[in-house]
Image 1: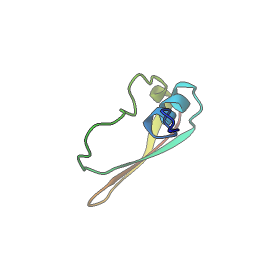
Image 2: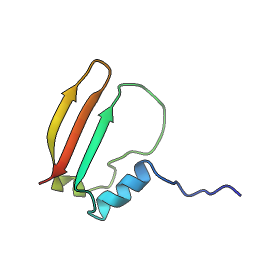
Image 3: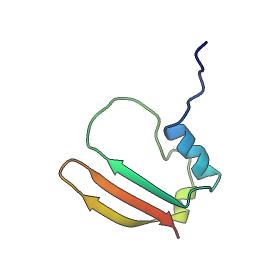
Image 4: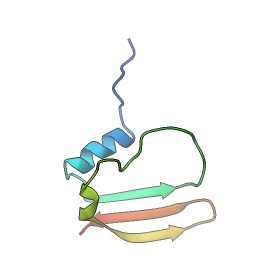
Length: 69
């Protein structure tokens, strides 16, 4: 029987952010259109506790690092 509960991804990240359990986060943005999906930061107010500490721009990706203020 297939589970309908997601095992990770944006929903899991949102739960950790909402519970204020994230001290550091790294995002790797790739400008590729993939279609629909979960929005990572919808309804998440905990982002105010994080500050961007590093950004590295490469030809096909942008690496962002955030840490607790």
